[in-house]
Length: 81
Figure 1: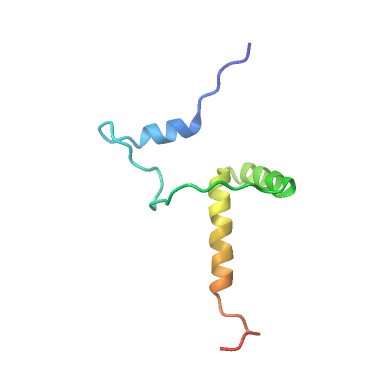
Figure 2: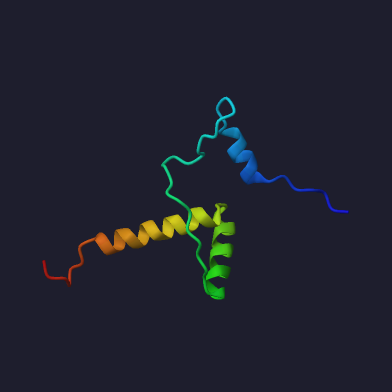
């Protein structure tokens, strides 16, 4: 029989408890959660990249969305302003 693994996410949340009240482990407040279904190739890339970086899939996706947002908001030399 295999040894039961500790849920690291639970440990992280448990460490943030303040007198029995939940306190977010995140530096910034988060909005409600969103479900997201990815094509298989993107799902596999997210899994692999998150493992390489040692971060969660959610952290990687947040970083990707921030990067995309910054790209869209940046001035582009070929655009007329």
